[in-house]
Image (cartoon, rainbow, N blue to C red):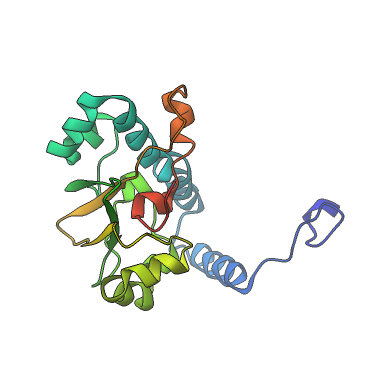
Length: 201
């Protein structure tokens, strides 16, 4: 079939080396009966459609528009997040960090890659990298600058070290001129990196 060929007139590109390796490993595991393809599809579907940054974005947007929910998130983020149906593995103990005009929060896991899966999905590769994990604590402003975030000196940067016991979710400041937007429209403005603290909205 013509549309299956990489680089054809539809603008598709050849798969990367990593994609080819993943596909080869998957094929081998399926061939040996070690992995059920339907189970793999279910896992991928779960992380693409039920878990991920869109969940965290809904938490943030709700906190922006509902003062009572924001207060609940400040008191007990685990319960507030679970109220929206987002709980489970890697999200058992959540803490919400609120950015303000005076404070910018940033999350790292210096030991490995602890990350709030129910609200952010799987961690990005850079979050797990040794340079990010070490430099985020030593030089947070330098790391933020590499992400395109330059903060004035009067804004304090607080770095929070995620652990197996506690996972953090940054609640970015609500962007200016968004008073008339619906909660859904506000959620569309929230980025994964904004909820880690490596971006500003």
